[in-house]
Length: 202
Image 1 (cartoon, one colour):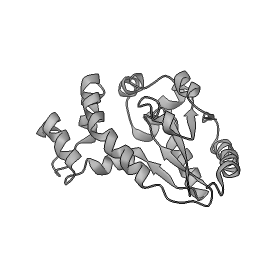
Image 2: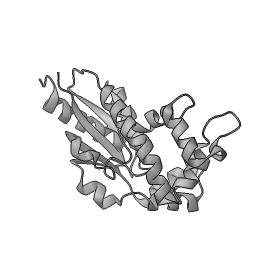
Image 3: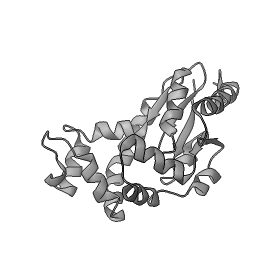
């Protein structure tokens, strides 16, 4: 059975992981690119060794793991180093995501990829969902939920593709400036749409 691949993306703080969680509760397989990347950057993986080789032992914390906050500060302040990190992680992450896709009675799965647009992977999807909200909403969420300071948030958001570009590349747009109930209603509508489109697809 061919499973339709629905790419889910959005800027940091947009709420795409919340959207993915709603799809999961509806029984849809969701595969998270960030989760796979985190796994590959653990000791024992060749990607871990390569990252340490390039960025140095200073990014290792006392427990022997990569200090993600320190590595983040490095790559979000240097586009060349960010590209180097992406070249290490993106190919194996992409490969693992597609190998994890399972048959589904609903006929589709969700691939949650923060850099879906930036990496051009949106062209490989059957449909693309962009989760959007105002910059002010993103900053408020990241400050409250993750304890990030505004300067750091601004620096990271400035490295991401602009909201209008994400919207232009999307087949469906979910607005997440409202309530959780409003968000759930939008996801439920898309679930019905995708099930109607792909259920029983050969």
